Structure formats: C-alpha cells, structure tokens
Amino acid sequence: MTVALLVLQFAACAALVAWAGTALSRSADRLATIHDWGRGWVGLALLATVTSLPELASGVSAVTLVDAPNLAVGNALGACVVNLAFLVVVDLLQRRQPLYRHASPSHLLSAGFGVVMLGLVAMSLVTGRAVPVLLGVGLYSPLLLGLYLLALRSVFHHERAHRGGEEPAAKRRQPVGREWWRFGAAALVVLAAGSWLPEVADGLARELGLSRSFVGTVFMALVTTLPEMAVTLAALRLGALDMAIGNLLGSNLFNVVVIAVDDLAYTQGPLLADVSPVHAGTAAAALVMTGLVIIGLVMRPQGRVLRVLSWISAGLVAAGLINATLVYLAGT
Image (cartoon, rainbow, N blue to C red; front, side, top):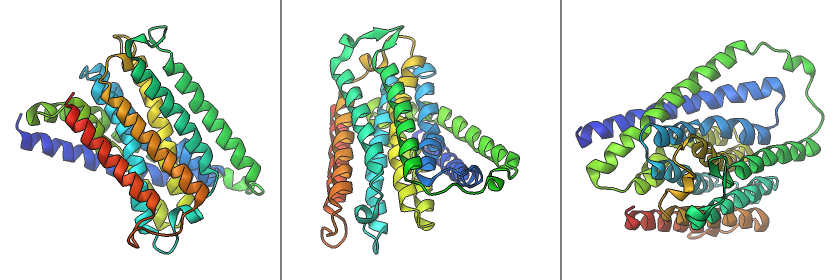
C-alpha cells in the first residue's frame, strides 16, 4: 500500500474521530443538563470517558489485531502528553482571562491522582519483566483501575460538598431517549475509527521507517486526542473554562486506565514488560507536565513570557518537544 493511500486513510480516521467526538460532547452536555450533573463531573466522568474512546479502541486493537504493544502504550501515554500540551492552546486563547488565574482549585484533585497513576506506570515500565504478575496481568493494572474509581468517587463527593442546591427534579424527568441514541451512534463511530487507526499507523511506521513507539506516541496520540481538543474548544466558546480543563485532566486519568484495559486484552503476559523502555520517558514527561499544571493552579501566575504565554505553558511546550525528540531518536 502506498504512503499516499495510508495518509489518506489516516486523515479519514482523524476526520471521523473529530466529528464523532464533537457529537459526543454535545450529547453529553445535554444529558448532563437533564440529569443535573455538575460541570466538573461531566468533564471528568463523562466527557473525558467518551472522548477517550479512540485511545481505548486503538489500544485494544493494537494488542489484539496488530500485535503492537508499543503502539498501544505509546498512544495512551502520548495522548496524556498531547492533552497537557493542549493546555497551551487554552492559555493562548484566554487573552482576557489568564488560564491559571481563574481556574478552579478543584482541578488539583484530578491532577494529583494523575501524578500517582502516571508514577505507577513509570515505575512498572522501569521494573520491566520483574513486575509482579496477578492472574496473567501486571499488578499495576488492578491498582490503576482502583485508583481511577477512587478518583471518580473523590471528585464526585468533593464537587457535591461545594455545590449549591440541586435543580428541580422536573428537569431530570425530561425525555432523554433520543439524546442517548445520538450518544450511542457517535460512540460507535469513534470505536470503529479507533479500531481502524492502529492498522493504518502500523503501515505508516513500516513505509516511513519510523518506530512504532514514535508513531503511537506522536501520530496516533494526536489523532485520538482530537475529540478532547474539540470538546475543549467548544467549552471555551461557551465560557466554561473549568469544563475545558477538567476534560483534559480527566482524559489523562482515563488514558492511564486504558493501559490496564490493554493489559487485560494482551494475552502474552504483562503488557508493560513487553514494550520499549522509552515509554518510561513519556510517562516522566507527562509527570513533569502535570506537576507544572499543579504549580500553576497553586501559584496562579499572571505574567506572560513575551506577552504570549505564561511560563507554565512555556514549560509544557518544552517538555512535550523534548519527549517527542527523545522517542524519535530512540527508534524502537
């Protein structure tokens, strides 16, 4: 298959994922209004989950159909880096309202759980084949799933404690059948495109002489995070800064859980024991970038570097570029 045809298929995947991700976000927003879900909860538990369906579908497809564990892990961790880097775009667009100055401090909870989960992945990658095994999967997998559920519960109760009175029950009795049908149809499109993506990316890696780690970390990560980008931009247009940030940070939690799901689907042993150690660098980059976000949420810097970006965003750009360069040079 020619490179041009592969690129065309890759572009088709990107278009499908972007369209379906936007449709998912609209349906999720309407369902949130009907069911009286808070914006933070929508960003973390609903929007982040549905917009991360491409990473889930691509990861499972990569380990079951393509037998490319490096694509799966590179995609999940690379998506974390891309999501955090996209906060730079949010910062650029917030000309009158500096990003970290007006963001809710509740995002610290999501970012903190992200640090713990990414740290666990990084340690497991460094451990390699010495990682403890439980029922055929790495011990990290049930731990990641448990931490994710704990994060959902913690954020839910934190928001519930800080929210005002609930909206009338009549709003929750509105008909939602048609909206759920739209939601499900868009989700199926995302799953189909996400399952197609690993085969196209694997073909590109062979034709261009690029490593699967690089293709998964950069190319696939960019495409599968298009729904997150679409949702974030839509939230900014609505003036919902916290929903935009919550979607990106919540997507990172789900992306790390995708590694645990991929591990369950991978039948040749613990997934992280069979991938390149270069992914530990990507996990470390995501940790550094999440740490910068936490610093920004605490310090709330107001100045901008060259009147364009906060120094937090400049650090996010630097960390993302360094990680992409190192993965490319590793060539595995």
